Amino acid sequence: MFQNIGEMVVLFWRTVLALPLAWRQRQKVFDQLFEIGNASLLMVCILSFFIGGVLALQTGPFMAERGLAGYIGGIVGYSLCRELAPIMMAILIAGRIGSAMAAEIGSMRAYQEIDALRTMNINPIHYLVLPRLLAIAIALPMLVVFAILVGWLGGALVASANDRIAVSFSAFFANVRDVVALKDVAHGVFKSFCFALIVGVVSCHQGLATIGGPRGIGRSVTKAVVNSIVLIVLFDYILTRLLQKG
Amino acid sequence: MSNPGTNQQGVAVRVRGLRKSFNGQEVLKGLDFDVNPGEIFVIMGPSGSGKSVLLKHIIGLEDPDAGEILINGESVQSPEVMNKYRMALVFQSGALLNSLTVGENVGLYLSEHRLKPPEEIARIVSEKLEVVGLKGAEDKLPGELSGGMKKRVAIARALVIEPQLILYDEPTSELDPLSAVVIAEEILHLKERIHVTSLVVSHDRDLAFGVADRIAVINDGQILTIGTPGEVKSKADALIQRFLHADFKREPTN
Image (cartoon, each protein chain N blue to C red):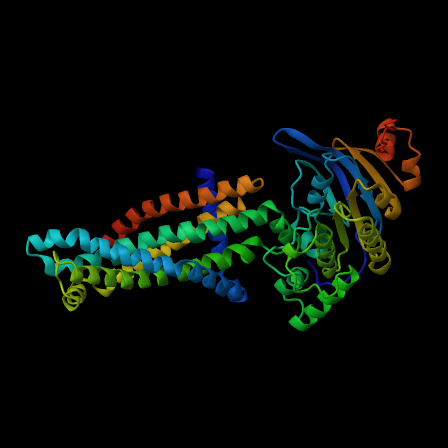
């Protein structure tokens, strides 16, 4: 385990050192961004809409019974942007994009494509890891902002449509405006940026560490997703603590 | 690696005391041999005798446990040497990047290192594909090619580097006899044209005796003999003779 952590830190550091080459790899970054957007946008919409809706549905009647229904917008808005959208989208991206990254790089490793790159003096970190890490670090925060907005919409629709809550659309968003500050959204975006780095580094590392054929690739994909999720949850706690102090 | 076209001379390869183990099993047991500049040196031996591992050491993909490999007297373990000399490995599987087209694969070295403008790269790619008999295949994906075609694309990719040392890992395996002849001719042609040093790993006897200046027979990580094709053929060693003359004969049923 400690060897893996060490290797991931080294991989991340080498990728950071390769950042001056990012402009040269811009086409690959755009290709990856398109892949990420294309593969996840619809799921982000569905997931965040229903998370917002369920959150309103779970808390709304309870609050309405106590005469606090007017605060439902704040509860949904605040929890979505500080916690639920970043962590849920990061888990979604770990499963959808991280697994694909680990599988693609893993199969390149298994079928000697990475060796072929090295014989041509092409650094696999510059060619494969840098564009993927940059793309995911750009895409996930953008997806999280999108997810927050869609989640609020889902919450507002449920709050207005459900008779037991009965909070109008405008009242819901008025409360969101009262409770949620720009700083809260920024916290969520910052967390998602950190989660993106975790998913990118873990998935690329697992891909590069693939040994064997199809079974090895399968193992790498599973490890990439599981390790990403464990680290996301762990770092979520650490980041939440740090951001609360800030 | 240096810019293609700046030096057309093959390099000398010297291997001394090369040893390598994987999981406690010794695969290379102290190999010693020299390859002269511009020579075609064929390493023959049965499967699992350590031939491919040896190639990976020479091109710097593996680090030896002991011993050294020198290119023109300089150790390949130094990154400067790997940058100084142009070397290419034609993998047994071809090892083409499946997400790229044939043209992009062949031109990858030039485009990634920004050595030529795109129009010039396209011209060179077309020229190299023509050399291996795949003119017009630029837009195909590796998945659309047969095993033999993939290998020819891999050779074209190696040629783009204008290598001083080219390593072939089983270049004729999976190829039909006609394609195998094309590859053998290309190996000879490259020697004449750019005086490249060629190190060919193969168990194809026709290829080995057809193209080699010298042959080394390797078995169980050790070199059994080194010599010209004529010298190797005349060796009395039973293992060498069995390997050179192994043939399948069907017993008559009636």
